[in-house]
Image (tube, rainbow, N blue to C red; front, side, top):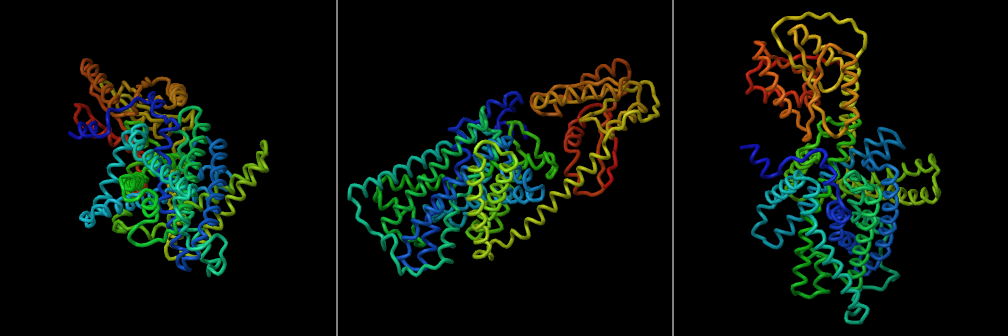
Length: 610
């Protein structure tokens, strides 16, 4: 029943060699990776005007210079991340750049910040989309949290079906939103240019006496910069693009930035010209839409498009989080299960972990995450600062082409990003102080996992020419599972040869790294020339199914020779219980599957030390 349900919800498994078919074109990548950034225009201008109105209505003209400053920051960030995509095409974005140029601890700050930020992305976006739904249907308000949880689970299911399918699903709401906002801005500007809409701004640009101080200006600027969240997602997901990956990723980033800049500038200008003032009942974007389209069909289509983009903006986190978790796991700072691809060639463990974290946040804050927006912004601008300043070091080290010009762009972006971090901690400390607790805890966890993996690797290193004492017993066939060549493997082979006179080493190989698989076979035969090494190929990244088929075949032969058959599964025994999560996942699954076979399943325990 579970397998049938899984196939129904997720689809049939894809072969590893079909991975190329899952790569994204620019059109689909824009839909998959830009929803978070583009959706922020729904509240970016409103954040600025809400801060300015605290001084007076006359201060609202300041939204124009603030918007220009935000656009300068957007240009610097976009150019910087284009450079990052070309310089570090393996993905990982800010984490890889910062680790390479600032050192591992700084890289972990960037990586940890983004991991938490992607969870906040999902929670904040889903909460905003839920609020749009409950605003349209007030009767659903008591069920807001439940609706949010259902939306997260739906998004998780869509992403577990694969990158292409999730991108195809998102194309409708994303491009519908792009169409509606483009139409609204162009039609509004046309009405202004033809004199059909009078100037309703509270004051002209440059008006003095608006009583706005530097603190209020900085607060409005930091609030408006929330429109830039999600810009970094494309640099984390470069491996998901079609070839040439860096060129397509950089082009998609530029297209997204141009659309975002046009939307943000257009909405801010219309807000100023129309004299829009924020209120608790109607959003600034809705007021602009009403002033442009009236109360007709186009206005309601705009509202539907806004609700849809806010609901699916969470999907940017589902695209970027698993790739970032993969890079951290590859460097041994997160469990290796985050490197495993699921049936549909996505990093399913990362997808499910993100969904669980977002649901927990949604439940903790009861579906209302406004207080988390400053923390959300800090989680973005600290990696922005580290990655862009890291690129300055990169250019001074490499000195390629017009490297001084590129370093100057990075300097502008890092300086403004750093200023925003200072402003956020200064003015929103009550909201962002958890960051000062979360990050040390995360970094401690990263290094604890890394220390454990390094200690285990040292213990598992094979020492050739070691004297081995072997005993043989007739009438028994033993199959030893081999994942790689380690001290644990060598000891398990020795133990197997003491149990039986026919020992087979069984390894399941995947298509993802054929050179590594071939090298393992050569090294094993060199270390154990008297043991038969069997390499079973799996196109679907599954160890269980091909192992069961091989065991069934060997069981037939053993029965004909009147041999007993034992399956020897090496298992690590860590000193601490939490370390079990880092080991033995595949062996536990296989042991469960073998329970239905008429064979003896034995375990070789390899005790790990600190």
